[in-house]
Picture 1 (cartoon, rainbow, N blue to C red):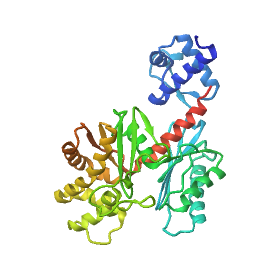
Picture 2 (cartoon, one colour):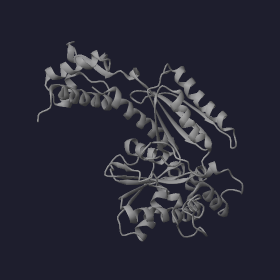
Picture 3 (cartoon, rainbow, N blue to C red):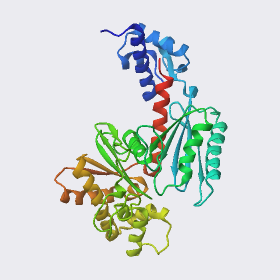
Picture 4 (cartoon, one colour):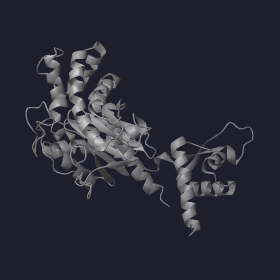
Length: 387
C-alpha cells in the first residue's frame, strides 16, 4: 500500500533534516541533490519546515544570481537544549548543548568520599541548573546521564549495585524530579562504545567489543550495529570474569579476584611499583598517567606484563562473541595507545583461532560524556523532528 500524502511528507521532512544535521546548512538545490526529490517537493518541505520553526535561512551562497537556491537553510539549533552528565565515584562532569549537539558550556563538581548524600546531590543538580541558565538554556529538553552500574533494561533505572555511592541513584531521581526534561540513563561503558562508533575508533565497524580500562573494568558489546544489554542489563560486567593469576575468584557482591583485580587502576599501580616506575601510595587516578609515561619511556617489561593481563579478559570475550574487533578504551586504554593494543593483539593471535583486530580507543575518558550527549541528542531530535 502506498504511503499517504501525510506520511510521505513526514518521511521527506525527516530525510531533509537528517542531511541538514549531518552536513550543516544546505541550499534547496543541494537538498534536491541529496534527497533525490523533485524541486517542487523540496520547495514545499523547506517552506513547511521553516514555518514550523525547525529550519531557518542562515546565510547565502556566493552565487552571482540571487534566488531561492542561493539561500542556505539550517536547523534552528536553539529550538531545544540538551545536557549530558558523566557520573563518577569522585564527582560529576557535565555539558550543556544545543539541539545539534554543539557544546555551549562545560562544568564539573567533585564529590569527596564520605560526603553527605543530600549535599552531593544538591551541588550536582544546582551546578547543572546554573550552567544551563548561564547559556540561556534554562528549560532543558533532554538530559543524558552516563553512570557506572547496571541499568534495568525494562525501566531504564540505575539499579542498586554494590560499591557505588548512594548519591548516584539519588542524583538520577533528583534530576527527574526537579528538571522539566526527559532524563535518560545508560551504563557508562555502553555510552563510550556509542561515542567510539560515531566519532572514534570504530567508525567503520558495526560489530565490536569495547573493553573499558580505568578505575573500574567493563565492556560494551555491539553486534550488527546494536548495543546488547542482556536480560538484566549486565552484559559486559567483565570485572567479575574469573581469570587466572588473581589468587581467588569474585563473588556476587565483589569483583575482587576477577579480571578487575588484574587490570583495574589499583592493580596497574601495584604493577608499576613492582617495576620501579612509581613508589607506593600513588592515588589510583594516576594509573593512566603511569601507563602513558611507560609508553613514552619504553618500559617494555611493565607493558608486556600489562598486555599479558589485559589479553586474558580480551581472549575470554573473543572466544564467546567472535566480534572481530576489540577496542581498548577508557583512560588507560587511550594512554596505552597503539603500543599496548599491538601487544595485546599479538598475544591474542596466539591464544585464539578467531581473527581479531585490537584497536586503541580514541576518546579516552571523554567518551562517556560524548556518548551521553549523543544519546540525548538522538532522543530529543526524535521528538522535536516528529511530524
